[in-house]
Length: 531
Image (cartoon, rainbow, N blue to C red; front, side, top):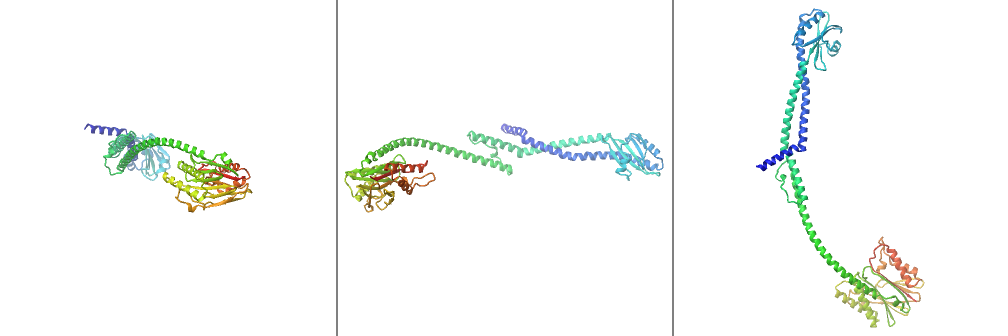
């Protein structure tokens, strides 16, 4: 019971202090006052006119009696008769004046009226009660009569004391104003009481619910008990309350889902942190392994002094891997006067591609050391070795490989790789397609049926240029490829120089073409020139 009384007192306090309540009281009360004022003003004017008419009617009776009783007396005698009426306190006559029909003043008594012959004739010259005029101060009232006479009509104007009318009008205004204020106050209080129950108090409680909802959301508190949740209304305010409840439920559900998502995210972040730590350690280990592999790869590339020892040939080689360990392969081997030059490209990059490249170099050197000179047996045996190791590694690597056997100005070319550029001393170029000279290594166990070879004769100043697709497929910022045509043009332009200078010119042109674009593939180039 005390809690119920406390809630009622709080509602009453909120009602009296609410801005909405003050606005409603002000506008309702002001509207009623304006309406009643619009009614009061005509009523006051009508009441004043009624009281003036009463004064005139009393005087009209006396004037009419004198006019009918003494129709033939002179104007002066008529004026004396009217002057006698001043003694009657009921008539409240203060003075008067008589005019001839042409406006000449015959005489006056007491206070001279402000209403004269000209004013009467302008208003209503033909009526017995010719006209009247209350003064602005409200204390005097002038009335006129047109008196028929045998010698001509006379105009009588009488001034009355209208102070009682003014007092009565003020009293009327006071009475009516009091009634208006009482009615306005009653209607305002009644309107406020009705609106307080149906509109204002529900709105104020809805505001409290909004504040409580905001605090619950901001402070992550349990759902509060809302007043609006237990109210059932079938009007627009009910729709607003229902919308608020629905909105809060949706927000609360979203918060619950957000908490769950944050918890899941925190757990995922924890797992990611652990994985990152493991990955960091693994990356460190792999970086060390790749560094070792790169070192091995660079160590196994032919050195410049080895290339200088090849009889009859001027050779310049270049390889730049796109990643830490490249998949490109080239080698120049000299065994008992047999010179074998190889160039290949392992699919992909990284450690596995580097391992396949190392296996190819090792197997090639082993076969050469065992005096294997037949190109079919050489490439097929090399393929079987690579094929078996790739399957043991469990990867899907393969490589294209071309082998050049050189002796006394003669080159025997076998194996499938990029086109070989054959350039003569005069700068003329021939392009030798290797597509039918072999098959990619590591895809099939036996490729003997696919292997063929072709002969190339080199004279002094002639030579060949070997490369991988990292050169021809290098792209600039506009995604244009460097291309085989540009490579041939560059080689042709600088062929009169040494093999090393030709190699440098080509690499410089490729790098200038690429610009700031990232290098996506290994760059390998081998320039061979007959001395």
